[in-house]
Image 1 (cartoon, helix red, strand yellow):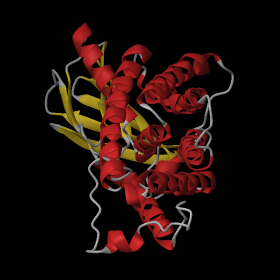
Image 2 (cartoon, helix red, strand yellow):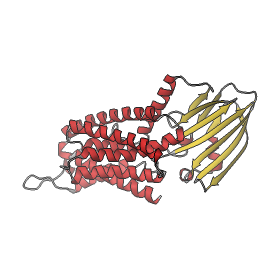
Image 3 (cartoon, helix red, strand yellow):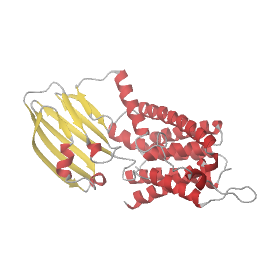
Length: 351
């Protein structure tokens, strides 16, 4: 996962002085080759994980009857483009403790744009609970999410897996209210920072704010835009495709970068933040469709971690601006974000 926070840039001695922005006789800064070089360097670093997807999700169903279990995995076709031998690899990364696999089949379902795998397992004795490990994020993309629903003896349970959480125990009992709130809010928090586009957009939001008061307004409107999308889209005839959501998210990064570079005095920027928040809300809409979690808890967890990230990025950029003012960190960072957003948009549009 790529983030501006925590990434260390190494510079050769004297390089900062050699690449600092030049100035015209009147004192106005110019776009020197050093400025362009720094912007392109940052853009390359930011764009390193473009093989990942903003929206990367799969789902599965498990049914346990006595000592016999059936599992079906459904993976979007675009997710397996770079997976070697998906008919073997995918199921090898979903393992049920104490169960022996007895059969497996995999095939493309082009009508639904899915790759579907079915497997059967046998336990030595009927299990009271199911322990499993899912590491699909290791063979797809780092921010991949797998949603598993299970049934045993008329009771249901479910689990969510990603790069951070690869183990789960299904106990087939109704969860408590605290467990529901913790799980669903935690899932929203993880999804809010699930990919580089989400994090870099928050960085662009910080750069776009010209004061702390404006930053607060931008942040609140962005969160409100996400909530509006989650509330409205389920009632619309149009449903966003994952590729559209990815391309739109990339453009939001690029647009805010354009605002910073070319429209430094533009007004009503809080309205722009709200509109762009709607596009990011489409991702949560897709996630909620797959997980069937409660929107309130998911959005609460997402908003909490997004606002915390905005605060952290603000501290980083404030310190950077004070210590490296001659390097024009705001302009360089905005230029890098613009390049990143446009490259990501083109790649998702054509790929």
